[in-house]
Image 1: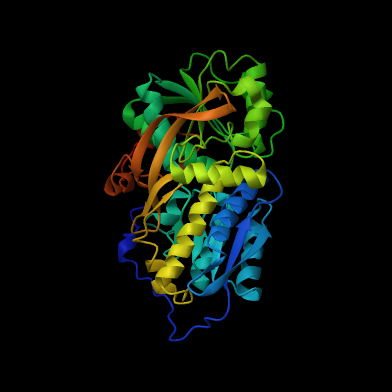
Image 2: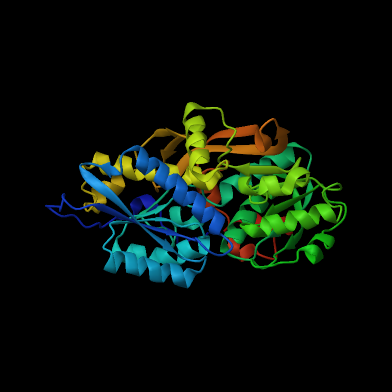
Length: 419
């Protein structure tokens, strides 16, 4: 984080307003998701959750129909930017939503800011700096999923509490990986722990054997962030090579124990810890109803992406209703998100002044239940904002951005160095 960052609350929105709106037309939402490639399962889940909520309100709000235009960004930043331009300039959408890949969200960020298009991050894209003070902050962004650092901070808190002092990390080599493991390193170092090894396999790695056998001996645990099919490939070899029997595994964001993978993994998944803002086993009326509808549509239990898509659709509908459907009044429409509060499948949701949601973080453990293998909540942290467990001022006082710490996270002095 840079000294030049300006408090986002002081940045004027300079948003366009209009005196009249074409109320008879639909509210067009461009949903940019990976529907092919490594992140395709995440994209499909986000889409299903989005449709579940909009269907529940008859696909209309504020006297206008809701029209979803879905585009596959293939997990590629260049494709994502091309799709965003097509949606805004050709399809005339008023809102962009979705975004599973951090790299895609970062690629579209400048364009959305330039065009003054509301951008609702209802997929996994967790780039911290999009909703924090600094050069990447975008006042047109609202996020209803999570940022990269808070599930990582929850993992650090749980690991340290349970006696982990030295850990090895393995993270996919891309922007989201750096954000996630950087958040873990900062929180873990602050508590007194140490990362003794960093490994960064490319996203499309097929053979994780060399990385697994290279894990440094004597660690208290292994911490991973391996999204998409990477997690499935990794854990099979982690188990086959006998490492699961030696070291406890913490799966930040639950990518390895992603719900669709659990039947394939079977006993290999048992005992794996994960941190996330959702678990299908949450016993609330909102989640039970969501899980039932999701299973009816997808024939399997949902992941967090489904709940995130649902929350994104809910927040969009709430804000549109608050402005009587006049979403073209961008300033009023975006302002309507800030006071929004609602109960979701994930738990209670609210928003901070930067458009980032405040929600619970859960530590889950894979157990075998009468319904099959499931992520069962073993601990929760409530009302987690994007700076948790620090204050905004404390987080901003650190010298390095997480991406700048790649290869140096074993050095806690550097990780915790102040400006």
